[in-house]
Image 1 (cartoon, one colour):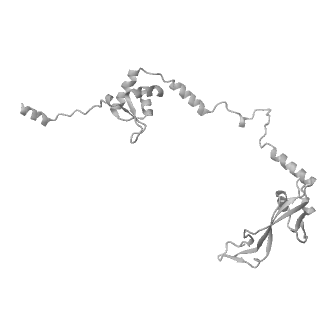
Image 2 (cartoon, rainbow, N blue to C red):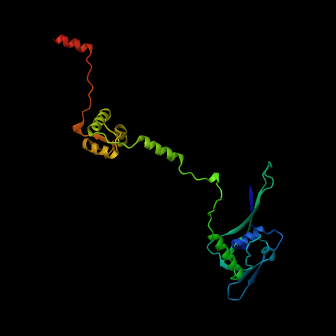
Length: 262
């Protein structure tokens, strides 16, 4: 069960966007130190000027060799008119194993009335930081390293096993030679005695002829179907169709009837 506390609905809050280097510093900072100060200057008839000054304690939070970050920043203010945004916080239940589930409290901390974007002032520290980030971004992710000894784990292979097996199989099969045209025709006629329609792959397996040579012969004695139900299949031309017909078996009764008529 969740309860929503709306007591702070009327409070206006800021939504501030800060550079990544500030966010990293604030994430490292402990909760008991001052991270910075805001200075708001108001001049009648103009928009208020907001400045952020980071604390020395935050500026000192850096790893060895890490570049220093700017201390002074300005915040550009813009109003929120077309959106309804809010800030919420919640307290999760501590005892999740309880038989009676605890209530999860959800609080509305305020309604966002202005957006602020934090920008560093143009100074030497900022230019050095920007130059360092550009250098890091331009460095290649992979580098060439010269090896002074053989590394077995990364030893290159001249050819892979599946490629070797494929080449050996091709050599064993050898190049398909053209048989005599009459011999190929006899094989085709024998095949078409069994079935009326064939695709080119099946005919190539039967005759074992080069596909170009086989098509030349097929065009002479066969028709190629372009429509269903036998699309992309070959069949003999009508003048070459001499399918075997089943010879009727003469029964004993037929013999007796023939002898009676005689």
